[in-house]
Length: 212
Image (tube, rainbow, N blue to C red):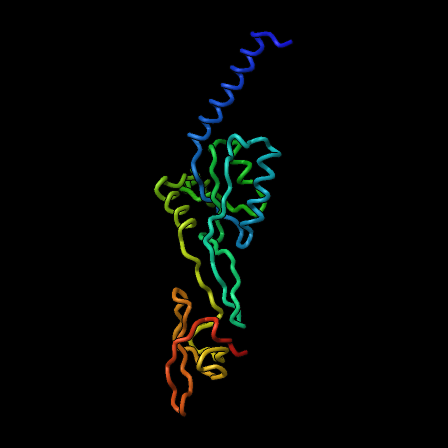
């Protein structure tokens, strides 16, 4: 049977742990970490595993790859919903910076370095040590607001000068050349030969197909 003293002791221990966790939450800042190109997801996975292995979950609290929704228009006009990285080549980490947490992040495979201020060496040649500099609160708020509110970015594998064929609408089966692309409107302009004359016509992305 647990005595009142034991219960008081357990309560005090839990209270101290809660206070320490809350203090860490308050002290934690967001840092940008440069990683090898195309390795953002791999770094996030590896770092989250290392956080558990080195028991630093109380110091490294969150790892994020900011992204916005995107819609990619395939050559056949169909749409693929995907995600667009806001900062390709970077991962954001919310952490309490000390030697232990720095080492865990810095020594993660495919991590290049923290973004920060380079401190010059006292003498000799070579690059100095980079002192990590936390992101400003306003900048962090802007980044995550952008990822949550931005409308999907429309991307299409077409550019001025490409040859296209119209798949639907009144100009179906007409062939032409792209003269303007407007991703934000999901439309393009193409010169179509109508009655023997080149005529600019505005078309939806999904109405055309790029000719190989």
